[in-house]
Image 1: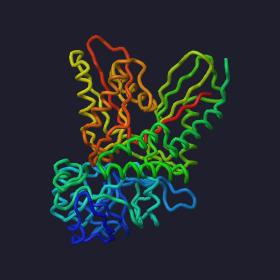
Image 2: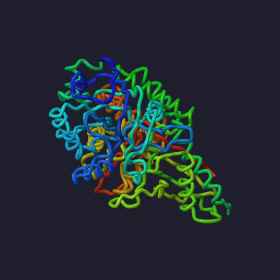
Image 3: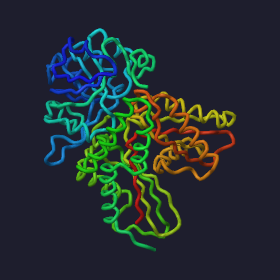
Image 4: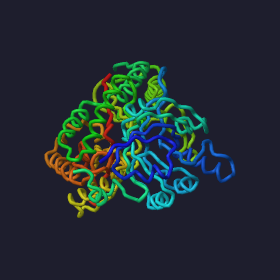
Length: 186
Length: 280
């Protein structure tokens, strides 16, 4: 298991160096979107509108943060379960997204699309929202403000602790055979 | 007849909402400390240690342990000799939730209609289960229930002939299928018996019990221990990356049922298994 520092933007070149099981410290700009924001984002793009951020080489974080207390950048901000976004993900990968941060399994369609588009799926620690919020240095709502916690936010993160769950070759840390193949765990 | 003012209820509920979301219960904290020593996977061990650090940060900085501060679920026992003064009990519980979620900077996660999906912006309404009991006390048990784990819960109406093995298989199958999605290590709440809805309510109620306790019936306690051991052999592990810590606890509640039925409900909770109770 290796530990890597990764900086955004996330290019194909960087993605290809990542293997399931790698520990990552991510620094840079990422964008939040969960259920409702995905629905709107895709409808907007299909209507021909510009998306609220440049999708090319971007990373989307599946999160609905708590409100920020006075003096804080953001409230607790751990990942939400990713499979609910599976329906929307291949479309966004085709549009240039390179990384996703969440927790839990992804569909075969998502994994095929990740292989096709050189994309990576990172796992953040579910239920560690307080810890993760301390890695978020800047937060700004950039679209769909009426959605409240589900609005799209631009975040600047420093050393956000992640694990590569599914790499662009399709190796999957949730899969026991893949763990054995990559000599992970034990 | 003992009088209880609604303002007292509002204040207490508000406090419970905030405290339970900032402070992980000792039953869970102690268990995570214990299993972080016995976890066999290095990634798993690292995750369990980060969960302890997260709980420490949350308590010290007064931040929610998890951003999913849940749908507010209550089990309320009303002594039949109490009189609620100044308004309705349900309204005062919801007002406590409203104030707690606002003043505690907790996430508002409730939509007004399941299909139209517009946020109510105050985390109400709550789910409240009432029970009328003897005496003049008011007992309010609260749990903010996250939905990553709620979504992985299941109900099955087994046949009596399926027996205890059918029950075990269904519970194990539910945990297996949930895999990494509900944020393992999980707490498994099980309701066996009653009717369709009773089994579900029992499963929820099981999650309100500390994980360092057992069902008072010996054969159910044995089942809790057996399932705990079996689930921890599934190699799901912390966050689903493998390991021998998949469940922190298995709590089972039972109720009499019909000669034709064997309802079983499994309500999954994540490791941020928050619950609190007060007696007024």
